[in-house]
Length: 490
Image 1 (cartoon, one colour):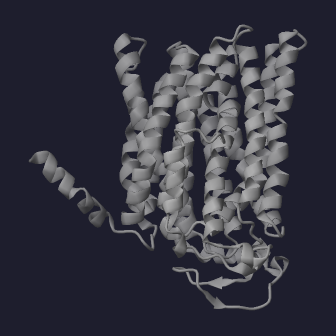
Image 2 (cartoon, helix red, strand yellow; image 1 turned 180 degrees about the vertical axis):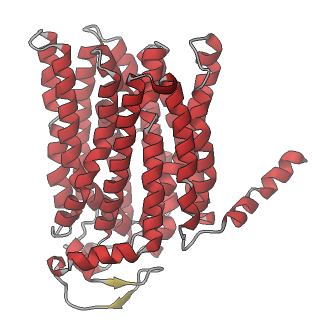
Image 3 (cartoon, one colour; image 1 turned 30 degrees about the vertical axis):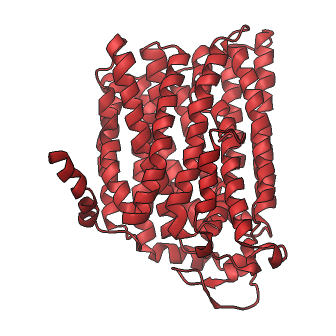
């Protein structure tokens, strides 16, 4: 999510202007500013600002997670359990999202709340930059630096978790449901393009830094923090939303036309008991929650350990791993727009189920990979391309499906509930995976990959019972591919 508007990004970003903004309706009551400033051009500007925000934030994410942070811990000699904790912390802290959603609904501005949350959560990474400098001067040892890294990851994600549901609710208001597949496909595609370009460059810079890879990571981290702060500046170009007023507007589920108007109700007067009672009665939401939670557990069992497998077991250089990650990001970028258009046509549920089967068996493809020329030059690149292409569908449609099943009122609390429960399951999966690897249970990493496949297939079952208001049945979705099969046979 880098924020530079590079020439390679322009064709994709410009496509946002072509999205049919006329179908998006935001009521002037929920905007804290004068309604004359609200127009179709303002919506287009908001969507472009959000996309560029994603680019800048992506660079920050590249330096504070993923392969660069994993390689940093490998260089420090961190244990598999530390890798499990590293991957589980971002999911475990999702438990705080309901609190963040509760607080955000009482803020008069989505923009102000976002700045209040994300600025401190990104600036705290400066402490790790100082810690790396102290380690270079032998003021602290490697284990202390590993502990410091995990603490910073915990505090950063804990604080940032207070804003996730609010941001998602903000975007759900700005982007009409009929356009979400296409818009988020474009936005995520730009983010993937950022990864495609920046990850290998960052990997090469870190691995060839004259002061060593640890110092190189410190420099890359500092640059990432700067980009992270630049992304927050984009919030000022997005239409601000007043969540208290938004909750008071009764809307039609299909076209967001106002059906009832009245004075703005204070969201603090909403009975929390009645709110949780309404969630318990929402069978469709609960089925999606069950699917998403089990899926997060199954995926988290092994996903965090793919990089560890390449860096430690296969002993690949970090520059090689970043190249593979770039191939995965490239496939993700190319397929996102296609998945977005397909989801708008047949529904998110059908895409999640059909592509989910492919993603479920993906861990089995790691079995038998070794340090050979054939694996390094053919199998690993093809595997990462496959993971990028299919993972794009799961990420995009899972996010859109969450927007679909949550009602318009108090959306951020619904989003926070999903994040909290699924995050807890994902964190448990990661910690369990790290523990099983450390005790070498059932073959260590390879046995873990098999367990993950089994649980992923089980996770798809609740998805059959989730209702997609605009989606097609699985049989109708299969028929979409019939012309393609006929052409292949011919």
